[in-house]
Amino acid sequence: MNKILTTSTIVIFLLLMSISLNAQTKDMPNALGFKVLFLDYYTPNSSPAAATLDDISNGFEFSYNRYLNNYLDFTVPVRFGVIDLPNDIDNKSLIGLDALLKAKYYKEGNVVAPYIYAGGGFASEDTNSGYFQIPAGIGFNFHAWKRAAINTQLGYRFSPTEDKNTLELGLGFIVNLGPLDPNERDKDRDGIPDAQDSCPNEKGSKLAGGCPDRDGDGAPDMTDKCPDVPGPDNGCPESEEAKVDADGDGVPDAEDDCPTEAGTVENKGCPEIDKSADADGDGVPDVSDDCPTEAGTLATRGCPDGDGDGVANKDDLCPTEAGLAALNGCPDSDNDGVANRNDNCPSTPGLAQFNGCPDTDNDGVADPNDKCPTTAGAAENFGCPQIRQDEREALALATRAIRFETGKATLKTSSYTVLDKVASILQRYPNYRVSIAGHTDSVGDSGKNLRLSEERAKSCFNYLLSKGLDASKISFIGYGETQPISSNSTKEGRRLNRRVEFNLYLE
Image: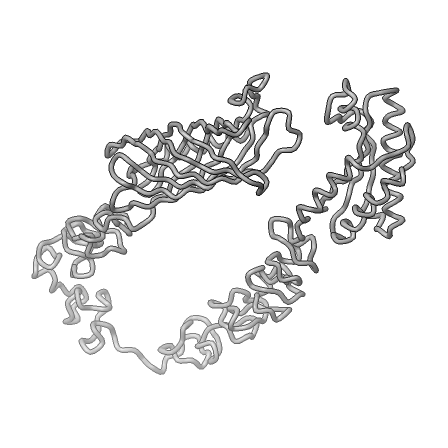
């Protein structure tokens, strides 16, 4: 239910944010799609009762979409999911491939584009031999951007194979591939297409051909001799005003680098400079001094250098600590090229991509965040190796295969082989911890059942210790009859409830 609500919320939000509409056309005929699937195998297969939310399984779909004409599209979806069949204890994985034709209705400017679809498909469960299906249904594309559409689809999949008919709901998106129409590109977003914009990388006005124009007189700032005063003559009010000389030095203000100080024509209107002047007395003449009012050093072009590292205070990101010029004056204690101020591991050489921290096992997860820092693993698993599927299945089998003497916590000898297999798996994953949980059926006194379940879990714990496993990595607990996985009203249900579970986790 939470998945459905979350997906619906995202769809509604994107629709509200949409500002421009487009669909697949002959100019952009190719598109890729993705959908989350909700699969119902109960309702269409004559189940004793209609499906509940707990009976709905999940999957997802990647698709290639090809525009054929204004009324037809061709789609090839690849589907992955889980099959939840009535009276089937173990869910099965699903992979499928379809070929579909979509008959659509779309009118330029419409937000919603409905369609119907039908075709053929092939599905396989747990990589075993497959079976044929005929999918058909309806869908809607909600066009959100020039390249994208939100997609929802409801369909029925008929199969001649028993119990394989399916109702499915899909929610996802479609993204068009290929360049936009050149007449629609507008990199600077000033409302003027790049093909008509003389300054495509700077926001401007239509009057100035898409270039900046501060005074709005139609003359672009780059050619406007009076960019802050509107006028028709080269952007100036009148040609005579361009000759105004406010400081009276014979250089018109439009050409005067120092329009408020009288200077010389040779200096472009600026006064002559005394090349020997040294206002701060630091031995660096003002003409060469980057900090003429602050005493500094020759090495820092007359600017102060408080920590004496050769980097002027004005350029020094660490002005009170001597550092390296290459790091803007900041120190690097572990010499890894990452300044201490940005280094999360300042005393251990590391990599810039991990903010100065090392990655000992080179698995792309920095040691401080790696729960298995010396063993390469997956980033999504905190840098630890994933437990193999066959080993997960072996642990699940152990839950059903471990046997005890009736009413006792004494292991039957047939359980030793199963526990040996569990021990060998745990030894291959030394960074994982394991919790052993004992469970019983509801026959007898609940207090005695609770004690019996804990004693049975402890028997498994002691056996694993005898195989050399670290006691600090193993814990055990008993739940008695409080967590059944089947009904206690049948013999088979009670058998399933009497179990010991092994749960591996990272701490």
